[in-house]
Image (cartoon, rainbow, N blue to C red):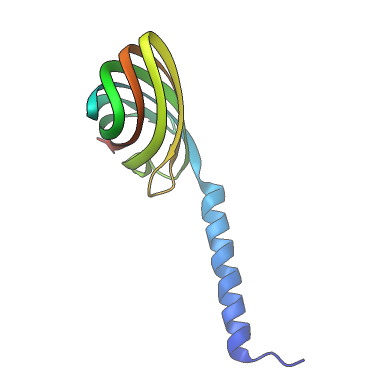
Length: 146
């Protein structure tokens, strides 16, 4: 069976592209992240905070800003910590993360969340929440590595 040189070239290009993509993903690394976020909401909410990314033995300050909308009211502070996966450099953590969720805290509570940004960085976070808040909403947060 004779295969056209064009088809053979296209197949080789696709295989090479997949190999390069797989090699890039295999080289991705992980880091640790911790931050605190203040959140206040009455149907529409806002949040902000700061923390630290630890990646390859170095610490990077980060800032957090966010919006939420849905059924939400109250105010709280959450202390998050966790792992950042699929990053090649600290700046890969910068970006917008979105989540849909629900929960609440009256005094103390806990949260667990997994989010991914547009660069493929994945946050796996757990947190302790303090305050009075109830929410069933869509939310987004932007992380900036300073």
